Image (tube, rainbow, N blue to C red):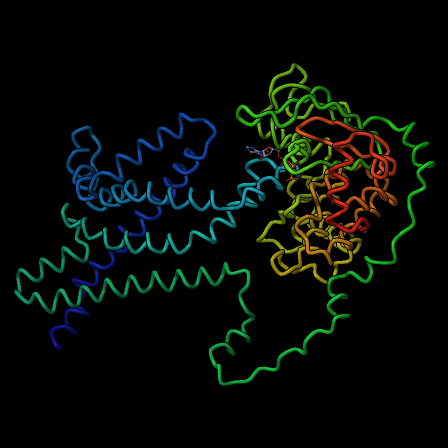
Length: 531
Ligand SMILES: Nc1ncnc2c1ncn2[C@@H]1O[C@H](COP(=O)(O)OP(=O)(O)OP(=O)(O)O)[C@@H](O)[C@H]1O
């Protein structure tokens, strides 16, 4: 025991720890930098970069680190690169760690829901902004445990540097043991030192996880959770009316509003300019045609309900308009401008498409809300205003609160999306889409992911946009009553083609095409007709 304690505090071993830490930290730092580059290459749309990254991974994951260290220390001098033992160890460990860290980064980036990227694109964010502001913060939170494992593994691998005479902890323990023959005490002490270092990594990992935890309890709650014997005062259960007020529904659910003055709207719309013009749009996935020659013209202020059976191509059509999808042939012009193609007919880069989206101004609301999961309701709105429109923080914040007030959610401004109900999330998503004052709003089944009691609040918000703002809207919906009351025009899509197009109130009560009639009949059997 005495000997063990002596070795535990011996300067010779303690300085060995210092080298071990230097190799580990250097290797991890270099590995992380190279790993980021490799991950970027693998995710790049340029296939050749991905191939290079793969070849690198095969070589450095497939050969032992000990050989790589020997190569860096003994072989590199042959081509004029002379490194100290420390430099060679750090270099080899960096090259060895890089493909493992790259895979951790890549897996977690791919693990972020695709809808987050679509929402960023629809808001006009450039690919770099989406990666930096939306994807990376979410991916990093998920990759911390795996990076912690990698750090412990690098710590243990640093002991292989003893093979190139690096004076780290393992080599010094071995040297000491061979001169004193006190193997047990020395290796026991050195093992304990490795354990302490690994423990420090685990503590650091926990601290980072707590710091990044969006749901972390307030400090006083955390203290209380360590003392389960202390009984906490619990909030009294909500009454139904309090729950409704919390939902913001009271304000959003007045008695059903009177129908639109269709004659007046028709007169205004007849004079309005064309906002959207689609000609001969054809889109296929593999060999299957999903849109088959769609022609459509929408005027400013017009509210168009897009109806059709599941799989008829409604979402695809909306995504094409915003260039979230490419297509095979045909043209789409928004306010006279092609999104995705320059004046000479050449395809734009993703960055140029993002700028075009932001300039043209098309808002998009998704079926699954696609709020940015790591940002509060307020930041979901204010963030894109700062990053895309270049607004000041104060101005963006003011606009966010103004819009949250419009959708009845100022009291939930600082809540994370996952702490909001589906209806509240969709209302925040609508506020976010409205924030940059879009010329046109595309809504892709905005209520289909909601519980029935939350649908009305969202529909009322949309209806106000039509009536009070005169916003041009294209809404894919199965809410026939809502479409009949709010839309000026209804379009029925079947197998990628528009088979009926007319005044919403007429078409939805007296459809001409038998397939429209059958579809409406099925819906009316299943769902209540009014919003
Ligand atoms: N990324 C994709 N890859 C392959 N096929 C796809 C893809 N996205 C959609 N599809 C197919 O295209 C067809 C049209 O899909 P779309 O989502 O546009 O229909 P929809 O009318 O919006 O349906 P729903 O009402 O169920 O949302 C469907 O058959 C769907 O399976």
